[in-house]
Image (cartoon, rainbow, N blue to C red; front, side, top):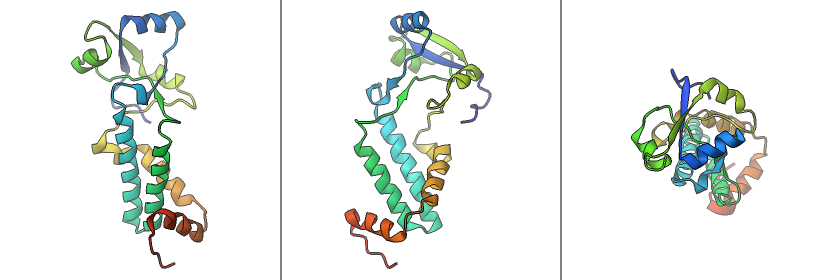
Length: 175
């Protein structure tokens, strides 16, 4: 991810208990996104990401890979509670009423400022610093292109892809 335009500082809203842990241990903890206040955000993001990749294949006229992409994402969704993403959340906004309310103990917590460039240096694999995308702009997310290229490059014989698709959909394809 490139640096969000003109963002030099990111803000982390939290309560005093978490602040004490951050300062005492000199670390930020990651939380399972499925246990966060809006776990549906990850599900919505994954659905929108799938749709964007599928649309790329459909626009190319590659309906087999479009359907295969849907099945791959569906299989991953089945694993949702076995494997999940972990995150620490930041905001580009220094004084955001919604952030204060939701994350900083109803306005009685703290807002910590972090330099973007230093967070980026700390985010080495398997960590990454990502901008949150919502439904309207997921098609612009770098993961759309990455997943599209990975699936497009897949060298499975067409007969394997065909059998894979037929298992569930009963799709009749003339190959």
